[in-house]
Length: 147
Image (spheres, rainbow, N blue to C red):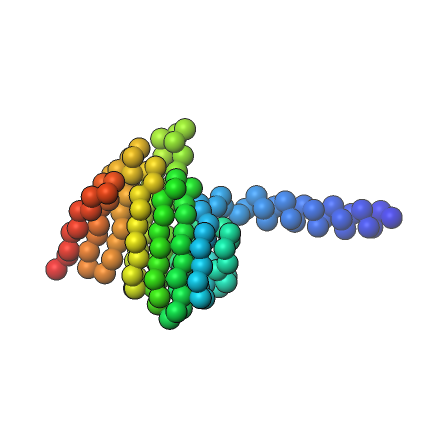
């Protein structure tokens, strides 16, 4: 009986330790058509509606796939077919005044609708594309193309 309790205690400790090490979710997959995947470190996670997203995730859609993402501040991002975006940084903590959203559009098409970060700290948003950076100020975009 002691062995069973010790084993159960170790399992529960392992689960609580893993949960404590998991970073806070920054958003989720809201819509999905076709196939998409999430690259999380060295893991590839199938994208399904409701799956949480984390800082550092890269989302890829298949040739016929599309995905809709909603972040914690209600920022909405939609990716079209054969698209890839990396969420490099994200912070939404109004209580402590910490805001950041940095995403790298690697390939494909996407739409972006700003959320609360754009209202509370518009200078905290940066969308990167090859050879350019877009600074978002609400519904206005500032595009800087590097040579």
